[in-house]
Amino acid sequence: MHNYKELKVWLKARELVKFIYKLTTKFPKEEVYGLTSQMRKAVISISSNIAEGSGHSSNKEFNHFLEISYSSASELETQLILSFDLEELNEGNDRINEVQKMLKGLMNSLRN
Image (tube, rainbow, N blue to C red; front, side, top):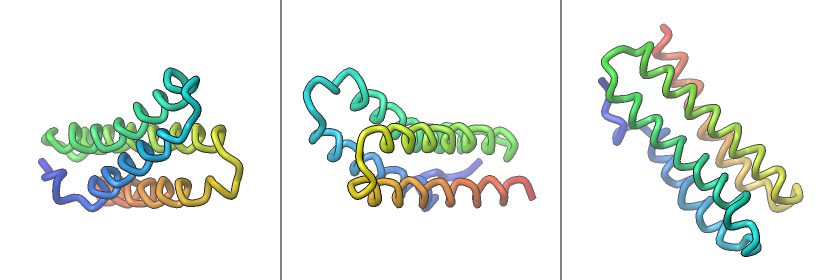
């Protein structure tokens, strides 16, 4: 088992949650049940699956939940692309890519 609270990727994922929540408050009200809701669900899924997977006893099971986290980050990235033009997209995209790289590194270390 892993202590998810000590994982840098979990901390970065939490920062990403705050960023996305602040960002989506700027969205038009008609997007509350559309992209705003979808983006918030996806970003919460990233840190939640890291935490859930860390409670499993095998690295294989933990890695499965990290893959789900990575998929949620990809979903979020797509939603961000759909929401903004490239200039506004850069900061959010950089944050998502950082979390994705950290997840890939952790998954690779569990496989070895």
